[in-house]
Image (cartoon, rainbow, N blue to C red; front, side):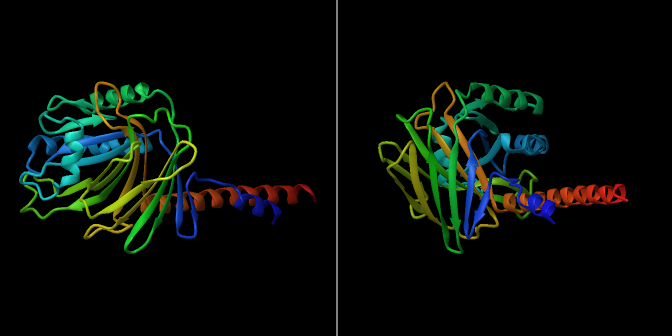
Length: 289
């Protein structure tokens, strides 16, 4: 019984659930902003290997799809704002990794994987973001801390809200793709000078707090049709202006399914360790006779 108690006390995850507040810690992920449109046939051709590449890299990559507003039901002002920020003038689709653009249609999964490695090597150092996420039926509060920022001047903290997966009717999916992942719906940014960007304007607000490093509190209401179970939240510390070098200093994401996966992983680990403990006790008891 003592051994079982010790097993159950082993911490497994970097994300903790305290009442309704989820604590998330990270920052090493590369921000992968994918400019796309439901009318884009090349986008549909690329999607199978793009999806496979994103899944195979796990937390190394955070996918954010920026849809065109022209003839695209998934386009919106938040996506337009991010495309303008990225100075996007290239063909569809284009893949921006930490702000650096990779042009299509010649891109392949292997080339995109090499671009991910290049983006990772371009990061100056590993910056850590800590976020406390408190959600309810109406919206949420996300408290963000970067205790040891690489750079403060000329940077901003940004909260992106994604719809984790959107299914379109065939009449609207003109390129044949019915399911679209990681669709950007809303964005809030606050610069270190206090300037704010909120798209759409009525979505929420943000304020900077005093403290060591960078501290901000984001508050928002759920967009129509979105709730905690269908949303992914992305926190980014980034440069205000995207130029030649990396524009992302650190990024992390959280979705409700991440918590369930952690709980499931914890359950399996406890079961395995408990089984090992029982086998050990069994053989020790046999050897004592």
